[in-house]
Length: 525
Image 1 (cartoon, rainbow, N blue to C red):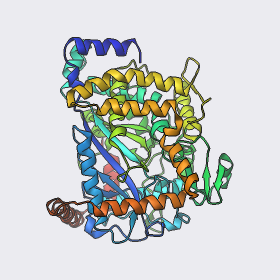
Image 2 (cartoon, rainbow, N blue to C red; image 1 turned 45 degrees about the vertical axis):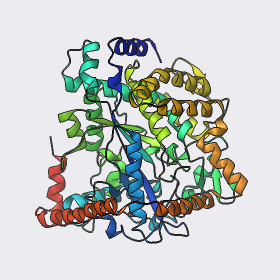
Image 3 (cartoon, one colour; image 1 turned 90 degrees about the horizontal axis):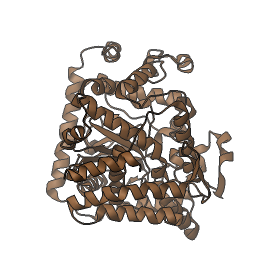
Image 4 (cartoon, one colour; image 1 turned 90 degrees about the vertical axis):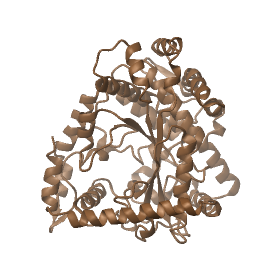
């Protein structure tokens, strides 16, 4: 990537410490919409057999009662991550009757906001807070955007790497601060290169016209694929475009990624600053909560970013305070579309590539980001989301324009050594193979998931809704026919029962008013 990257990598290799880059912990959070057999969003409540969406560690809901979220345990090997995710899918399919899990990120058969049930979490104060937060999202952004599903990749650098790296960097900074500095350097570089994820793994080049039924001004951004489907000929990830998570409401937030304190301060300022539009909504009407507060952000999670620094929050602890008190534990990459060519929505190749890219970002030079660069980064993301496979597409690299293909090849070239190190540690060629597969997609855009999806739709004559529903049905049969095993199924049933007991206990223990609970939560220092 640059001379700093080469020097750091050489120091690790010369000290025989390069193996410390391997075996970082990895986990996946995968969202997917529950749908009826005919493809419409499910109106049924979260199935009791799956446990409590509030307290279950692995099966919960995101925005909607119909939007499931599966959370794996962290593992050093991504194959174990995917095995765990597969077991969750198998268990879920044994407990949702005839419903399906939508195989695509972009929803189709939703019919206005009223068709999207907001997730319920019971009567405890923490459960009510989660529900009211979602009501606030409805009033601020509408419900349709909240039904878009994706895959989040969680990654932590191996703990044994930090003391060795700090010594090689000759840094006297306290360890927790040093780790935070390095994670934020990784995050800044990932922001700079994040467009590559949309190009390589974007799987939403088309969407159902019904999704934009209430947003007619956006229709002129697209071409007609068929009477029911919008698309762009070179689109990669419309989920990550301005019709999805990139929305104008948060365009002026100016969240800083230059250091941990700046990040916490800018995010806290957004959570504590009133917003005129949200003041008009009000907090309560006729005694019912409409949103948690009238501020720019209700809570930290409302800020949509491609990558987040994370620390495991304790019960009732604000995420920004967890970061302030204990530093950065891992990063969460949020830009992966659901992989339509995988029955569980994500592949080992994509996780291997992401891990190698993050380590490349960690070791590379990473100056601070000013507002001009942030604007260029956002522009690049939108360009790639809408037109990433255009062979003439130029991106802004700060010192001038560059062809996407040329920049992508340069990034992948810098990843070769990292992939070699990771392969040597685990044996085999998983990382190298993952990198080589993406090199093919860079040189031949027809190999990208977005191009393959459009080509398959053309060959079958299917609309995006028909295509997604056909794959959803196929994957449902495949997963139902796969053996979960009585012992593993019993474990999931036990966790489900325990989660229901935990929710019941929370509801019994909740002695303070919801208003007092919120005051205490937001006044944490």
